[in-house]
Amino acid sequence: MPKAIPVAVITNRDGAHLDQWIPSLAAIEEVESVTLVDPSGASVPAARKALGNKLRAVHKDAAEMYRRFRPTASVIALESRLCPAAIDQALDAGAHVLSEKPGCTRVEDFTPLVRKAQQRHKHLMLVMANRSHAPVQEARRMIRKGQLGNIYGIEIHIVADQTRLTQRAYRESWQCIRERAGGGHLAWFGIMWLDLAMYITGLRVEAVTGFHGVVGGQPIDVEDSAVLALKFNRRCFGTMTSAYYLDRGVQSHIQIWGEHGWVKLATVEEQPMQHYTTRVGAGQQPRVQEYAYPRGQRGYTPFLRSAVRACMGQEDPPMTADECLALLRAVYGFYQSAQTERVQRLT
Image 1 (cartoon, one colour):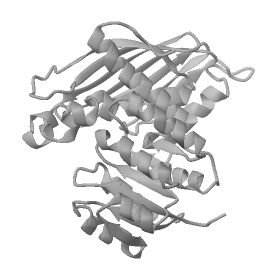
Image 2 (cartoon, helix red, strand yellow):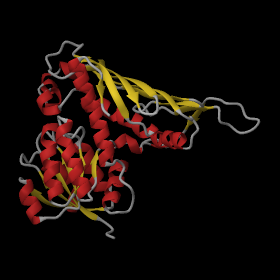
Image 3 (cartoon, one colour):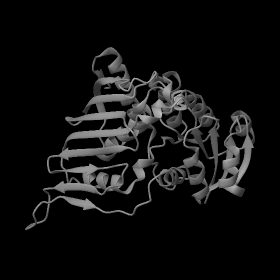
Image 4 (cartoon, one colour):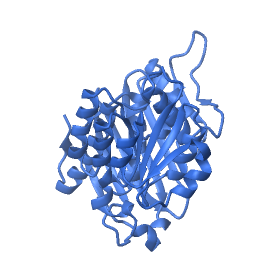
C-alpha cells in the first residue's frame, strides 16, 4: 500500500475554490505530487507558490497529461457544465475522482458516471467539505446511536449576501448563468446544506416541491431564492430556504427533531452545536447541552485528506457515488418541480 499518491488537478481560468484545493493538496502528506492542467495558465503562479517541489508538471491539455502520467486521483475544479466530460475522462484514465459541486447541469449527465465509477471500482466524490466538520460528525454519531430515536422533521436554511449580485463581474460569472451552472443559490450553496441534512440523518429525499425565483431583481437567469418542501424516507418531512438575502455574511442552521430530542447546528458561524435528548441515565433530567469542539478545523483539508486516504485504500470515502447521485436527484428534482409546479417524486 503506497504511503502517498500522485494527484492531478483539472481546472481553467474559471475554476472554483482553487484557493482551497491547492493549499490543501500542499498540506496533505498523503499527496506525493500534483500535476496541474490549466489551458489558461491562470492558476500556475499560485500553484507553484503553494506547492513548491510537490508540483510535478503543468499541462494545457488533460488528454496529454493522462498519456504521460497516471494520477491515482483527479480533482475536477471546473464550472458545472464542463465537469461530466472531465470526470468521464479521468475515469477512463483509471483515476478516482473528486469534483466540485454540483458536478453537472443535469442529473442525467451524472448518472452514467456513477455506473462507470462503480464498474471500474473507482471512487467518485463531490466535495462536500462540511461533512468533516466536528459538530457534523458528532450530530451524525448521536443519531446513529439512537439518541434522537426516529427522525420526525428537518429544517434547513442557508442565506448568503445579495450584495454580490449587484456586482456586474459576479453576475457575468458562470455561477449566475443557468446553462453553465445548472442552477443558482441552491446548486452552488444550498446543495451543501441539503447534503449535510441527508448525511447526518442517513435519510434520502423521496419527493420534493417548492418555488424559486429572483426576488432581488438583479438581471440573472438563475434563482437567488429557493424554498423547498421535502419528503424523506422513513416518514420524515423537511423544509429548506436557500437564498441570497443579506447585505453581507452568511446565516445558516440545520435543526433535526426526533422522538427523543433534537439537534441544532449553525454550520457556518461555528457556534456550539446544541442538542437535547430524553434518553438520559437514571436520576438525570433532560437538558439542553452544547457540544464544544476545537475551532479552525473547517475547510477543504480534512475532507480532502479523507478522500485521498480512501483512494489509497486506507479508509472509506467521505462521500460515495451513490450519495452524490441521491443528492443531485433531489436538487435537480426540485428544479423540475418548480418549473412544472408539480411535486417531483424521486422513487
